[in-house]
Image (cartoon, helix red, strand yellow):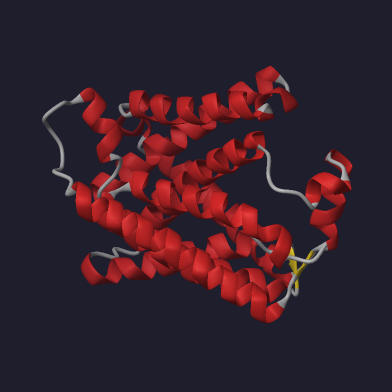
Amino acid sequence: MGIFSVIFLILDVILGVSIFVYYIINFKEVNSYFKYGAVLIGIICILELISGALGMVNIALSGVIYLKSIIMVCIGIHLSSKTGQVDIPLIKKLFRKGEGETINVRNYIISTAAVILGSVIFSYVLFKLTSPSMSQMIKKNLLDSTSFSELTSAPTFQVLIELVAISIAEEITFRFVIQNYVAKIFKLEGKKYWIAIVFAAFIWALAHGNTLDPEWVKFAQIFPIGIALGGLYKKYGLESSMFAHAGFNVIMSFFAVGLIRM
């Protein structure tokens, strides 16, 4: 296990315990947002059903995981309200038509597309310059679940759908919960909120440790992209960072075969 993975595990435990305590203390308020969490996690569930990923785990275990994810969404909404940040404006409009924040659709689309395009170009150039290879751990895990020919071919429709589901789940954890939790705990208001954005991007980058060799390349790729996603969330809400993250993952999956050595 690389140093990035070790640091992430330590911080993950500390944050996990702290956020759980926060949930217990604010139990009633947090759970009042349950319907929004159920809708968002329902989308992930549908995506994983389509991709076939849901069938990989025990149904009872899946229920526990999805319930935990719904609670995470509720915590994120609660933290957003406490830190004065945008939460999930598009989903909320499903329940409160004509209410909520006004969204400039043109700017929303342009900003989201800019983050996707910028992230793809940056990643492409970085990988071209460094020629990273897949880490031994990832290679072994993938070979245990698929054939080598599948690793060296274009991604299937099921893989693309799963990448979208993963993108949504990661944005809930890192941008919606961790970013806002750090902002609330350390009172990072106004321009200081960018400290929380950088911290969440740092944790997110660490979470991708031990995926490429050399390990620092993945960190160098993910960290600035995380800052861009955090800034996008700050301006337009969680759905925008989800769209950008998913778009980036899907596009890069087509380039990965030619950029990352097996």
